[in-house]
Image: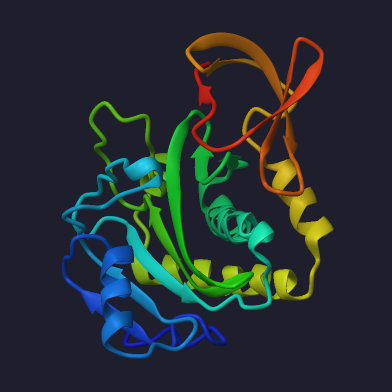
Length: 252
């Protein structure tokens, strides 16, 4: 495992490696309470005992097969109403990194998953600490399936399953960090339009008719995109409706 990532500008210059841990997000928060960490510090593990994703769902990953990493950012330039951009640029970095290997266009399932076809290949968990109207620091947890072959009943895939070839985990980590730096700089430069255009081009089920569950009711709808607060816009019976996370479930 790298002591640091040589090709990046600031991401991964400080690396904390744990053979196993409860969850990388929890562990890096623990380190922050004990010592100051530079922006761009990452915590990496081979195995999470209690890996978690959005809505406290369990994240399952075989030991040493995938990317399990948390990244510390200090996006003090970003207002609270633009928090969702951090999830967006992380998804974009992952799709940019994996697409050349998978040979297919990956899609971003709102709000924070990356899919290859109908199967999940990566997930993100963002946790922020705020002060007044801006961020103090943000931790971005990534789970990216690289060399895992068995997922049980989960609708999941990996780079190995998509390509038939194993990949070096450290190389794939560094590639994602390099691409995240690129998108993070665009965010600093307030290139919001370019970021949203790219996101919309990769948005899962966009402009397609599908079935959703909303407050227990099964409804046909069409995803149109996201608004300027990161909420999902879905056209239902000719009317565009706005949804927050947890208010809508994708069915088919």
